Image (cartoon, rainbow over all chains, first blue to last red; front, side):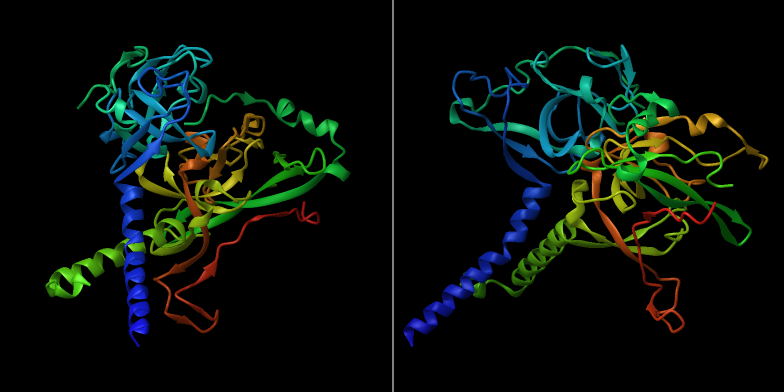
Length: 177
Length: 75
Length: 190
């Protein structure tokens, strides 16, 4: 008798716990998320430890990040790779819609005007970065989230996300109305 | 905006078709789209056919579609 | 459980949150029923009051084929969504705009260039055009669409201007399947 009641109780708690899973997923998808950063393209700001395999984990703010109005120049963002939607890249926003950008190799034109809803992204370590100079301006709809702070490892807490902001490439900023 | 892309002429674009044997590698496909005009109360739609050669260069490879729509396709 | 001790309003609120989030997750990953507007997909979808059934497992372009109908974020404005048909897969060579050019007084202009202006669809992108080539803002203007913006595949539609039950067609609210239109060419015609 006692046994039956307790197993019923376990089932009940499990179901209640499960009913909260969609809530967690919703928050994870739309509000905040923790993501691991791989690769060296954002050195020295992210993943500065070249010798060790340690990687940075960051807190990602997702709410409204797909809208270019909510993005600023020098924000560090994660976005779906335009050339492969299964991959996510981490770069720095270097230009907002209607800015004029001075490009570098291998972009085929020396200058580009960013169209409506498009941003220019580059890695801080711009010698080792596949960025807008390769795949062009990206639609802000590809943005997954904005990096707010480094959460792991603890030694990196409070690190400055604008330690280096890459190269200066804006030749003309969009006029803000 | 997609990555920088170059515009090709018909000859450049369809050059790979010359090296493929159309009978064994390619299949002619069509995709009908429309051109609609608003006429008073309703829309009048006229079909616009687009033709493609769907070619598989080697077994197991993903097919490539080459658009072969020309001036006569819709006449 | 402590839940039993909570006041009734907080219990209701907790249920509401969980149900809404569950609905949201289903909308994100499984299925969505949503309104479409505009002339760009005529005559496949009507300009007003058409609602489409969208399967979300085709998100990011996974499993999509040439000729499928899709919903995607508009590349130039992520607040808007677009409904288009895939008319070019990565690596395909497609004509940028073969459609008829009509000038403002209604004359059809003949331009041979439009049958010799090709583009190769880049990796990770698809070429999309509206079924109504005369009134559609699509890849012809904003170039290939990154697959990352694709939200799902349209498989069917309803029109709420139609009667609930149409006895001649045996459908409810004008239900129709939206099929893939990339088919074997009919060799008899032309």
